Each structure stands twice: as structure tokens, then as C-alpha cells.
Length: 131
Image (cartoon, rainbow, N blue to C red; front, top):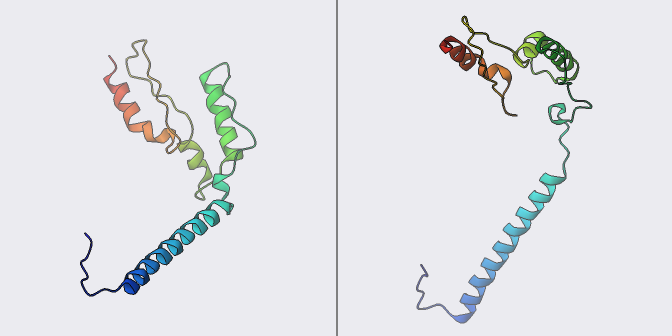
């Protein structure tokens, strides 16, 4: 809502308007500068580097797929902890077989923000419900 200023002269109005324009120009310049600077810096964190290869996925059997994927992970992973074997295990594909297999299967596919380990609980729950 516009403030009513009965005693304001034209000069004061122009001065107030000029201050607003200068403030807007300053904030706009700061925003553009921050955007250019932020987009032009290179992230040196190896976690964000592209892999030089991709894991193979056309093996003859599932165990071969798991083994080759684990080998690829061991060679290409940027580790977050000192326990490399645990990290490879948590990020490896796995299979849960129900106690009484019924000939049906469920394939769970994780996204980029998580790992196969995030499905351990639900995979076991689904296997326990198989009849």
C-alpha cells in the first residue's frame, strides 16, 4: 500500500525514487554476479566426476553380473569411508529368494540418490510374503 506523504516535495519524491532504482540495480547486479560466479566455478570433488567406463550388464547369469559389478565398483567407486568392502557390498546388486519360491519375481530398481541397500528391508518383506 502506498504511503501518503502530504508534505513531500517533488524533489523528495525524485530522490526516493532514485534510491529505489539504485537499490534495485545493486541487487540485480549482485544477483547476476553471484550467478555467473557460481556457474563458472568447477567442482573438484571426485564424487561428481564422470566415470571413464560403465559396468557391463550382459553376463550369462546373475552371479556373473554381481561379480563383475562388484569388481567395477571396487575399481571405480569414490569411497566415503575407510571400509571399502562394506561400501562395495552395500552398493552391489543382491537377490532375495523366498523360502517357498512360486515362480514369480520382483525386480526393484533404485534411483540415483540411493543404493541397492535401500531395498533390503522391502525385498525381505516381499520374499516373506511369497506363497
